[in-house]
Length: 84
Image (cartoon, rainbow, N blue to C red):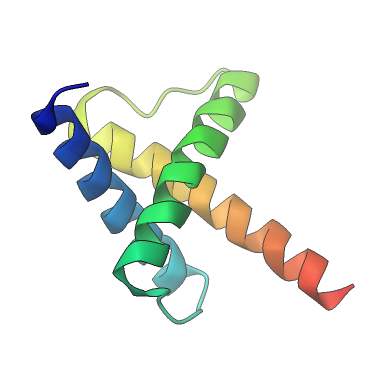
């Protein structure tokens, strides 16, 4: 992985983590927390989209959409576990 790929990964993680936090009506998790939520969310979103046979398209916007949906699902699951 070169430097450009790493920077893009971190950017997608930060943006999608921040968006998911805002959409799910939670506060942000700080820059590092948003990046972690976004990166884990991208894995979850990719898995979910693959199961459903859905594609968000390619490129940066598609990656952000996929990661945001996955991060939202991740935050939803975390909130369910915290309530139990």
